[in-house]
Image (tube, rainbow, N blue to C red; front, side, top):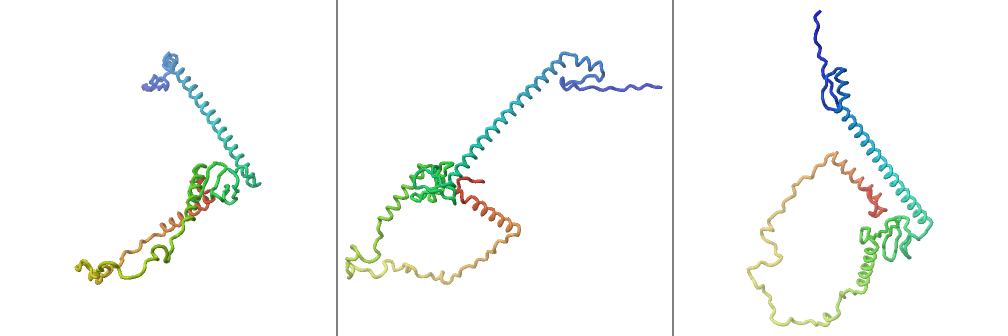
Length: 244
């Protein structure tokens, strides 16, 4: 029988990035060589470093999560204490005297200044300002509004009828020469309609109304309903804590 030669092909070494003969002797010789051993040592060192870095990153993430949970728990306990004090009528969280807790809005309210106070953030709110500000800005606005109200109340309106120097003027002919004719006779009388304007017709508006498809109409209704829901949900917060 005739014998045929069969090629054994080559073997790829992933560590050394080379091809070697695919037979036991060549593979064994390559694996015992210095180059292959150095590449194996380097690969093991790299794997150890990567594992240590990954383990360190996991530990840091676990510590960060624990810190976040501790802060959230502390904030939650503080909110519970504030709510309990508000329910019991405790005014220790109020900024001063005259502040009453408003159960509707969840803030302290001062009737004298018209300000709202949030014990959690320490900010003040007023309908006139329309935003939450610091204590200094809030009280400055309250003093300014009081001053404006006082000035408006002290100022008296002018009399509608006779009185004063105008009432003392007596009727009679006007002094000097009285001009009865217009100074420019060529000028048309003010307010007289023009001949062209009298015969000119107003152009009728022939613009057709915009046609809205059913899909657009449904989208507009959905958007309006969503906006109303957001306004109803955010109304008690007065813009302090927005969810969008």
